[in-house]
Amino acid sequence: MENKPRIRLLGVLLKAIVLFVLFNFAFIFIRDIPLGELSLYNSLLPGRERFPFGEAPQAYNRSMFDLDAMFASHVIHGTEKAPDEYRVLLIGDSSVWGTLLTPEQTLTGQLNAMDLTACGKNVRAYNLGYPFISLAQELLILDQALQYQLDMVVWLTTLESLPEEKQLGSPLVANNPDKIRKVIEKYDLSLDPDDLEQRLSWDETFVNRRREIADLLRLQINGLLWAATGIDQYYPEDYERAQIDLDPDDRFYELTPQDSLRENLSFEILDAGMSAAHVPTLLVNEPILVSNGLNSDIRYNFFYPRWAYDEYRELLAERARQNNWNYLDTWDLVPMQEYTNSGVHLTPFGESLLAEQVAREIQMICK
Image 1: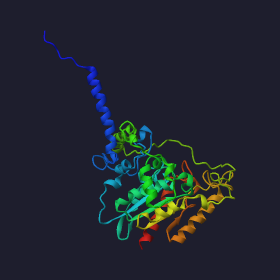
Image 2: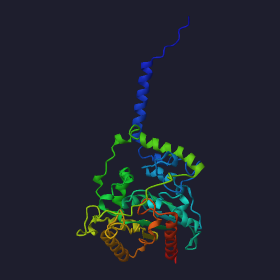
Image 3: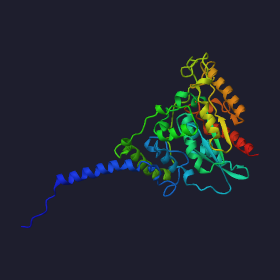
């Protein structure tokens, strides 16, 4: 009877373990290769109109903290700039990203629908807003976007983005420590990089990066369904409207009317961002809900006591004058009923009111 070769299970298992260990630690030596740029978007799939964000399965989307992967999925990454294109970049928080809005209903979408011309070219706006309110996050995104041949930056901001304690608290900032350190050094910011977690060589192994890699793969898979449906966030049939009746509390974070607001806001980040692109930059103080409900004599809305927001507007206007910035204050432009689930999230009509003002400013800057 012919003898069959024996499979030495222990030997096979040991070899498999050795190969896995080698594969695992091989990732340390490719740490400088941006895996996020390995993307189906802008090739087999169209680029997204806004950064991926969200966890709901029916949204065909995926929150990412890999900034390279976010840009690789975005339409700006795969769009060659035409000779007649006037490229306008919009940055800001979830109000710019467009919570509860389709891409066409966002500020960016409505600007593009206007067929604007500026400086003798056709305006094409790109939405690089991202949820979470933090100037440091917005400067991080802006700095990486400088490679895309910008003609103008429109930066929408609000008081909630300026407190010093908000700057390194953004998940996007916290998960890109090497990038934000470079930004801190490049713009000579006083942010303390020691507050960021230091990535060690061990963190670059396959085992420690498996969540990052899995998220990247899921983003590609979701892209197939998104490309077929155009759905990139969850649109609930009903949601809790922005709060109108407010608490009788005049604190902004731990600050009271007796405190100095100026000394607790990160204006240096705003200064850096306003000159970072070396192209015309328009700073917009974005609209906020102005309540007429209970305790509205103390607070404008859930975010802001009146004293803090009024002082912020004075400080911002003063800084804009001193630095000769292009500045647009739209704080009370949109009626109270045109806000959705937050004091900074607008309805499509509310966005149209803002789009008209921003479009006018873009064209005036070009004159």
